[in-house]
Length: 216
Image (cartoon, rainbow, N blue to C red):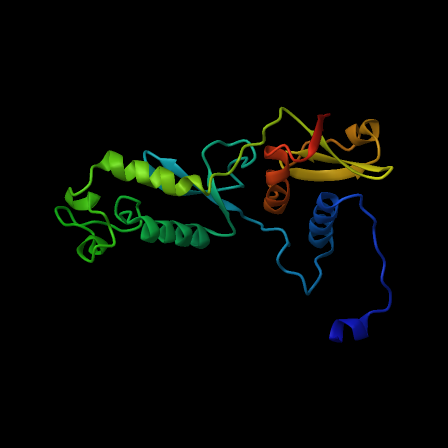
């Protein structure tokens, strides 16, 4: 009600389908930074988990291209959030904090969670390291970040009656919309950074084949 009392004008931008509406909303929020909508604002430093010598580490979108880098897990707004997610996985799957690099182990002694049966015991020889690693991979698989599956930009086509829009996407980033493929090609450009919101909107329709896609 307070927002309505402050409103002087309402305008709208028509889209052909839901995907176009979601992409446009995400882009406008990042461009205009509305005070009352924080969720879709751009995250300056996106994080993910990656295995290094079998141990999870936090990596940053400023150092890697998350759209093309294989074997990344989860998209997080901070290092703290990434490590919290790793702890949650460890708790759910009885993984060892020590083996995950979350706890420094004393030589010859198991981790604390093994003594209260929250860890399957790889730290004291109850479980083979290979079995622990296999369970870690299985736990992480649900967080796997999909690599961009095309060599360049695509046009995602939406239709409603005679209306038609071609949404230009490269590396999970939305670059704009046009009514024809020729006009869409002019919108293609090199993108920097990784748009987590664009990824979440586009991943399912593109990877499942639910959306019609043409190569640009």
